[in-house]
Structure formats: C-alpha cells, structure tokens
Length: 578
Image (cartoon, rainbow, N blue to C red; front, side, top):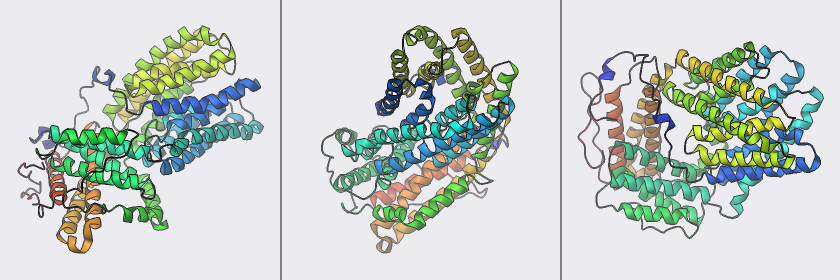
C-alpha cells in the first residue's frame, strides 16, 4: 500500500471496467515447503482401497472409496490434535454430501433437478468451507464428489453400502494423516514457528509495509497453531519463546537485530533435531507467554459455545460470505443448464468447473478462471496421450490414477493451472473404472464442459455484486481500533493485568490487524462497491503496529494517531515501528 493517499478514495464508487491481468495469474511460484505431505498422503490413502478393490475385482466401486481417500488432502497445516478433529469433520461432510447426491440420483433422472441439487450443494459447501476456513483444497473436492455422484447410475438400496465404502476409506485417510503424530508430535507447530521466524527475518532485512504485514500474519498463524496444539510440552515451550522473538523482530525491525540469527533458528526449528533455546526476549519472563489461559478458555464449554456462535454469525443474514455463495449457486446452475441444453448427458464437470472458480473477490476469480481453463484444456491432451496405457490392464489404470494424484498435489502449489493439468486426466480416468468410453466423446465433452463452466462461472461472479466487502472493511477498522485501545489499557495497567494479560491483548491486536489487511485486500479486488477509505486504512495499520512495537519493547505508552476535523485519522510520522 502506498504511503500517499489514493485518488480512488475520493470517488464514491469504483468503476466496473478495470484491467484484468492475463500473464500474472499464469506465472509459476515457488513450491510450498510441505507440498509432498498432501501428495504422499493422498497416494497412500488411495492405494489401500484401490488395491483392495483390484484384488476383489470390484474396481467399479472406486468412485465411492475415492471420496473418502481424497479427505487426506485436508488439514496438513494443523497441529495433530486439531487435525484429528478437522479430518473427522471433513470425512463426515464428504459422506453427507455424497449421501444427498446418491439419494437424489436414485430418486430422479431429471437433468434439471440434478443440476439444481448440484448447484445447491456446491453453494452450501462453499459457504461452509469459507466459514470454518478449512484451507486448500476447500470446497472443490467436496463438490467434485457430490456432483459426479449425482449423474452416476444409482439405486436407493445401494446407498448404505456405498456410503460405508466412503466412510471406510475416510478412516484410512484419517489414519494416514494423523499417524505421523506418533513419530514427530510437534511437526506442524515447528513448521509454523519456522515460517514466523523467516518472515521476521525478512522484515528485519527489508523493512516495509509488505514485510511487516507478512511477519504479523506469520506470527499470528504460529500463535494460533500453538494454541490449537493441546497441552504444553517442553518443545512447545521452546517454540513459544521463539515466536516471542519473531514477534519482537516483526513489529520493530531494529537494525541491530540479526536476520541471519532468525533464519538459523528457523532452519533448526524446521529440522528434526532439538528446538533452539533462545535467550529470554527483552522485558518478558522466559516462562510467561500468556497462552495457557487461552488454551484453558478454548477447552471449557463456554469457549466452545463462543466459537460456535462466531461460526453461526459468519453465515448469518449480513455475512460477507453470502454473496460468494450466491455466485456459486447461480454460476453452477447456469453452467449445468447450458451444458444440458447443448446435449451433454452428464454435465457435472461444468458444475465443478464453475464451483472451482469462486475466490474471495472478482479479480481473484478471474485469475482462477484463466488458470482452470488453461489447466483443463492441457489436461485433456495429457489424458488423450495416457489413455492407451491405462487400458492395458486394471493395474495400469490404478497406477495411472495414483500417479496423477501425486502429480496434482506436487504441482498445484507452483500454480493452480499446473496442478489442473494433472487433476483433469485423473478425473477422467476415474470414469474408466466403471467401463470404457469412446475417447473422442470423453475429450469433446470435457472441453465443452470446461469452456461453458468457466464462462458461466465468471459471468455470475461479474454480475452478482458483493458490496458487503466494503462494509467488512469498516467493521474491521472498528475492531482494530478497539483492539488497539485494549492493548494500550493492558499496557498502562500492566501491573494488574500481568504479562499474560498484556500478551493476550497484543495477540488480539495482531489478529485484528491481519483481518483488516485481509478485508482490505479482498475489497480492493471487488467490483461495484464503495471506494475504500485508503487514508484510514493506512493510519489504522500504522497506529496498530506502533502499539505492537511499543508494548513489545516496553518503551512506554504509544502515541495515538490524531484525528482531523474531517474524521479521517491522520497518518503518524514514520518511526522504527512503522
């Protein structure tokens, strides 16, 4: 964000016509540091039921076991205690969506009804995944399974047996993803803390708004991971000390701090050896980091009820998630009906294509539209090339599916379109388990589904407005101001609140600043809405980070940014914490 006020803030509404990037969405990124974890997990979780069905001669049931196996893609950034609960919820959600699809398919063969149910399921899955912040791959896998099941031949009496296959494969996926806890119990926490240390090192080496926000977000994610990890252990205590150092470096970025030391700690933390034992952070007792009380609050029933209330509010009538869910519903329905009108017998891929496009705002949805279209079209060519090999025998078909499952997760963190090149042949090969189909028909239908799904999906995103994005920014500004005031009060009365109370207030302020930046970034890429209050955003972020820096270093109470007569908070002078 520029330090100078934006001229866009003086206009009441943003223009609809804006430049849409073509090359930037297709650039390759560095692979994720944990890309191999979901890739290996989904291969192992799929191989067990696949090979079992191969031995039994029932590969026609692979679609139902694959629904459970694909749950192994979720939760790899979570500590094992929360991962176990999250994966159980994903397996049950997968089974619920599949059950609704199978029952519908057994009761009616009307394409109009099937498309309507598929669009409704896709919208529900999108809203639910966004509300709980499940993370990649989000709702797309759930929608892929439920949409495919809607157009598969089904009898009502078969539904219980097919669902039991899904639950059984889901149990295998749960074991595969949670099993590593027996070997390295704090692995996810160590990786989260290492990312925080690396982001803090970047902040020290190159101070600026971008690195400041990245460091704050990484530190916040590390604290959340430690909070969700369960009871403290000696390793987690050492990780807490490291996060305190990362937090102090991330908010102040003093030149006397050493980024190389932070990076060395990050490397040791990520490795399999002992966790580094840093000296106590200045002004903070080594044994007090204020998260025990938060852990206790999360464990009590009142804390769980508060979490449920927050979840329900996120899906309430005024939720900013509802416009995106409405886009999903309309776009998926439009895509399905267009394909059905053009004679595609099972237009589920168009529904899945449209559902996969919807991101947090219109600009990101456009990026995903380009990526999905390019990846699918290239993937169809890969499928045509590998189809003769897959038809040499059942084992070859199973191995091809496992290979593309691994390749999809190995490539998708580089760019979504690259992962789609592997996802498309895998999805098409699944149809081969039920019997061979003419290659030309499969390729032609998939190309048509992809193009129509992408066009209909983006059209819905462009026409269904999300003016609540700007309102979310206003609410985030108010929440950040309240959190800043609370942190200042905790610091002023630190003799009574103690280090743990001050640290909790600081973490709450960090969370509000991360949410504010997320809300602003989402609103910045949205169409048909009020212009953002650029000056207030800039001032609120500066003031909040000054408060974090001052309370972290125990320098004295921070100076609040003054308000002008127009009600706009004036940016404070830059200092070491800005």
